[in-house]
Length: 114
Ligand code: FES
Image (cartoon, rainbow, N blue to C red):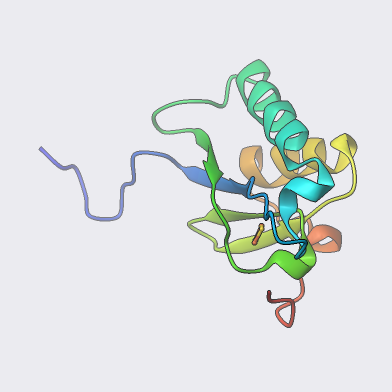
């Protein structure tokens, strides 16, 4: 039985775009999104955050904000991120996914689209 309409299976859900375009347009895979995804998954696991009531990290196809690539989005807050290196990923995992604090310096500006 469902405990409450407000409860969700995961506390936070991160979707990381891994899309690669073949036509030369900007895409997240051009920015090593797979390595960031792999690193993120393993950090979440190492910190014991993965699973029901915790954090889920999923691959995503194009999220249509390719100009900001690499991009990812965290729900339920619907906060979009872009990053440069693995230390940025660590900060997103520890600050936002674990502690619930948005990493403002990595937030993707609203104007960034495809
Ligand atoms: S290729 Fe990643 S958002 Fe489009």
